Length: 137
Image (cartoon, rainbow, N blue to C red):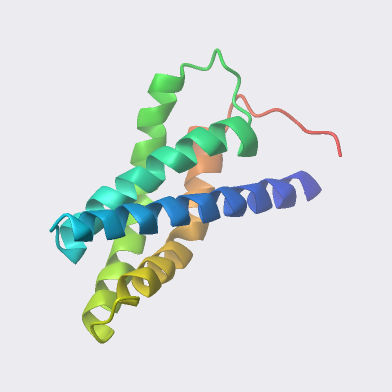
């Protein structure tokens, strides 16, 4: 049980890096003229790629021989479940918050928090269930 707790904490830390990439990509997309919804779709995919790279190396420590390209597609599919929750909460926040420069940031934060547990469970149980290495602490 303690390993699962450390694993979740690593997943959350990677999620923080993904959140930063997500917000940065969203604001770049907004600056390029995309709207808050199309920009968010692009920023979400950016965050998924960043978290994929970090989670497979640090959170779940998948063995290199575990066909990373195949796992990438499983990871993307798994993240779409949490991403649907994330995007729904983000969209509601965008529509409910007053228009302000930081509204997209707060909306991404709300969506990310809402999708966290779903994304962790799907990554742990669907993508990285085999090939996980025990870490001695």
